[in-house]
Image 1 (cartoon, rainbow, N blue to C red):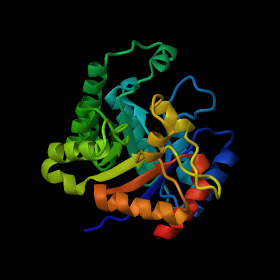
Image 2 (cartoon, rainbow, N blue to C red):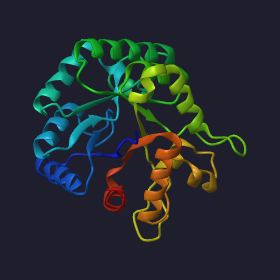
Image 3 (tube, rainbow, N blue to C red):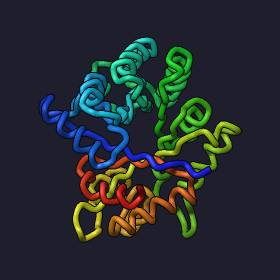
Image 4 (tube, rainbow, N blue to C red):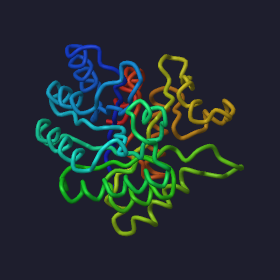
Length: 277
């Protein structure tokens, strides 16, 4: 059965309660289904995720709220579960909890916390995920990542898989995204059919040129050529109708139905949503 599309949008800063309410209502009116809040420390203007989600849920009528993604290494599982359950209650069951390992050393330093090894951070993510599934089983969990160990945890325990696009192809015909999805399929087994596949879009046109700003994308692939960046599955080009056709193809080819864009993509991407609904 073909799954319906869902669309998420990130919010990068909160200037005031009134501005947040206005932003949430505008995004909801534009057709977005989920407001995503990041979890970063030491970056000016980045909001604290849990109070921001509560305020956003109060402003929205039906829009869900979620983290994209919580730095699990910052939290003891019991404390994270307490806060997540509170947000879920206060949002009337509209929380999608996104989890990641945490990867920015400077943020651990700002928090005056030791920076665990990659393996330790992945182990903590697994422990946290299992704890949450036991103590708050009704809250959908998204796990985002690209490595084998993180995707295996996601495949076995999460409800939503956050894909990064798989990286730049290494040779003609190479499809890193397809490889990552096949890895998830194998690791998930029978539960794969129930998983929702998400991808975070980093490049979307914002004007009639149909050409996306690649600044954010380039940060993830600094050595790639512009041609390579434009070919990535995390980058969308063309008219809203062109992009709608691209997303239908992503659903048909990869099974991806949940797309997350950045707040400055909102107006242009809303035209894509109109084409798909």
